[in-house]
Image (tube, rainbow, N blue to C red; front, side, top):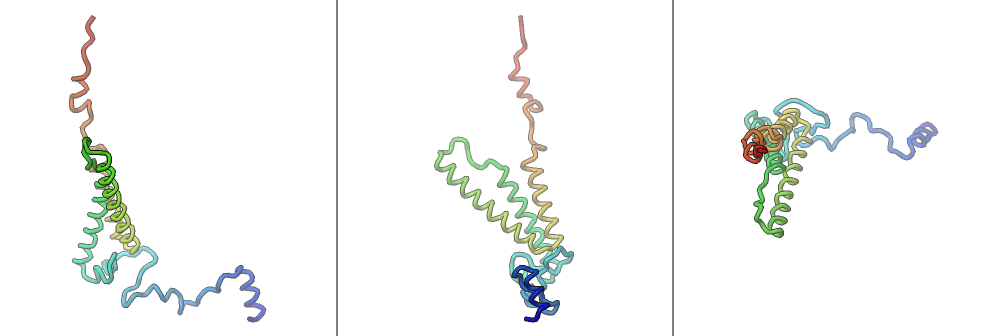
Length: 160
């Protein structure tokens, strides 16, 4: 190592010197597909599985629908009450654990799909979460006690 290299190495506190552009990121190429490290537009993507959806537009559309449905189901599982009130504590605990495990698995699949850095995948994942939350978590479509008339039934007129 000459003096300039030694000074550069010493200044970087033990970090390896940067690679030149001809050898940078060799692990990012995967066969003929380039794995992106920044967001990009286009149907030529690889989402979740090797060579899926590939270069076919129809398969890309199917992949987008798949990611949308996954995100939508995550919101449904997060906000729905699937356990009956009269369930035993042990049964409720096991069912809740199973539902949580499924939800976490689906959330991680959505995250891995978004890590393809495809803008379309990113947008449909957000759209699936958004629509799922709107329908199941926002109370927009739930009747309030006042609107359903139950509040008027519980209030008794005051007579003196």
